Image (tube, rainbow, N blue to C red):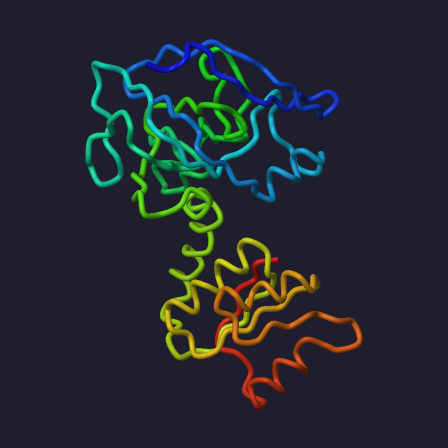
Length: 259
């Protein structure tokens, strides 16, 4: 039995203020799921939205990198995860950032990210039908059609939380890059995307992983994520010269721009 009320932090459009709100537990329609938020990591897009440098419909609840535990489902509908397994109360899950209609012209052409009725967690204007659509809340109300993934209990919340955004973005880049085994890989930027890419290249047996950034702390941290060489970018020392030196004049095979 869960509490009949939920809480959230709402970003208002007029003054960019964050407001605490207490709302009633939503009544679910068939195919919808109510999830108790266990962890929500902060994406760069969340910061840009809060700072006003990124346009997002408001009022909204920021946060889309989430892990949660299922607390309620509609009794007359069986929701299934990506692997076609029934989703049940108590399941620890993560889910897709966006939900497309699968019917419009863009969806039919495979451009689901351009769907004319796209629903985006953490970037959705709140309304009476869904007022718990972001991670900065006690619960998230999943709409029908959301792609759900069950998270193994062996995987910590903090590691699993960015899987649907930062991790997915990096792995999509690796999928396009192809085999990196024994190749020299340069990763530009050592933020969340960059260190994830560094770990990915290392796990895929890249021959040499070089990571660059303008922030000394980020550069040092990349060494903990598989980088062999961490390069601090300086105006007086062009990056390409250092790369040529470290690769004995050969250069690199692949560059991942994660800035």
